[in-house]
Structure formats: C-alpha cells, structure tokens
Amino acid sequence: MPRYDYICLDCGEQFEIRMSMADYSEGVKPGCQACGSDRAARTFAAVGVLTGSRSGGSSASACGPTGFT
Image: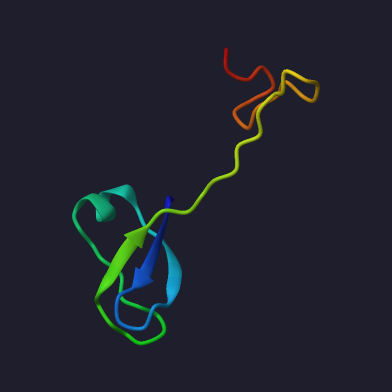
C-alpha cells in the first residue's frame, strides 16, 4: 500500500499514512494524529536513488542490477 506524507495546517505535525490508491483517488483525507484537526496537506518526501558513477562505483541502480540505459 502506498505511503502518503502529510503536514497538519493547524499544529504543524508531520505524519505519514498508508492508504489504498482507491481511497486516495476518492479524496479521503486523514486527520492529524496529534491534534485531531482535519486540515492536513500532502507533502512530498525526498527519495534516495542509488545510481552508477562515471568515475567508478557501482553501475547498479535502485531499480535492479542492470540499471537504466
């Protein structure tokens, strides 16, 4: 199940929710777990990706042993 990151617009608490893509596409919005507010905005978390290097290192990527071409 996908993970969605949110921030509460009232108290500033950052939290993550796992919900089905169907629920997300229907507009289901989670409430803040800290203050109970229903005013939460989705945020985007940075995701690390391992890639090859021209100056040495591994040619593997996070997607598999052959990487992208």
